[in-house]
Length: 64
Image 1 (tube, rainbow, N blue to C red):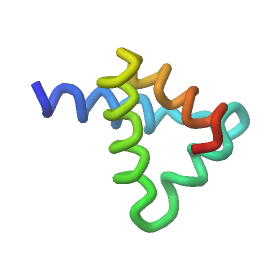
Image 2: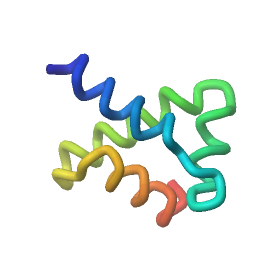
Image 3: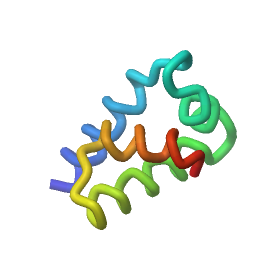
């Protein structure tokens, strides 16, 4: 199950559109950025029952 969730998060982060989500796309390029984003997405999925894409959009909108 954990592998499937991490794979879904990776798929969502890999399809990041830099025009629509510049903060997230830039964040995943810096050292440790991907792991930080993955962790944030996972927390939002658990806490708010978001999908990976919803969590990523939330991170972008809130500039987390």
